[in-house]
Image (cartoon, rainbow over all chains, first blue to last red; front, side, top):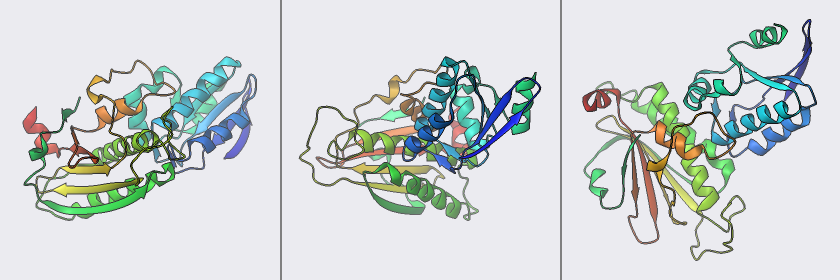
Length: 114
Length: 180
């Protein structure tokens, strides 16, 4: 996972760029470990999915876990860079009810500053 | 909600000719899921070269890739209790020897995209007709919901004793239009 850090006027933001073309039941444990490793109290995290063409229910479950886990420790996870197949999946499961989703990572960064 | 058919409806698949098809044998291992997706996509791409037919579009193929991945995951995790990736509790062994799963993808002469998944593990125990709409995404239990939303028809067969076959079918756009 590529990790970048950026700052807005209000907070520091961690950008996690997911290195997988697909997140499915075959690699979800690895993905979840990568997520877990970066979570800190009060963290503001953007999950950049621009490399990811496919996510199944296991991958989705790991993202939901990440959103909830960060919320428990007063952090927040937002999602960026979703491609069409992932966007269709997110619409099907109503991901927008749980997390803010942005087309571009910069939009997600800017959203933390407002 | 897809049309769901059980054993006895095997004639639903009889008499249909495919214009493109490919098969894959995988062992019951979750690391093999991406191979099934590649198989489905390659058959669809080859079928698209047949100009005379009307086929599933890109979104429908993505839906089939997702539905097949979910179904295969479920089979790998629950149908083979002796496998390392199996989550079925309380069962140590099964009398069935093979842990191979056969995946066949085809486009038939009506333009339907069909995936047959055949195995000789434990039969699929879940009721796909019972999936409820989601209020919000959850950490688990979304697989059957996704299958039910991604395909138009599911046929659950037992072609020979000890063997299970589930077929996922997506209608071409023209057939959907006729049915609505």
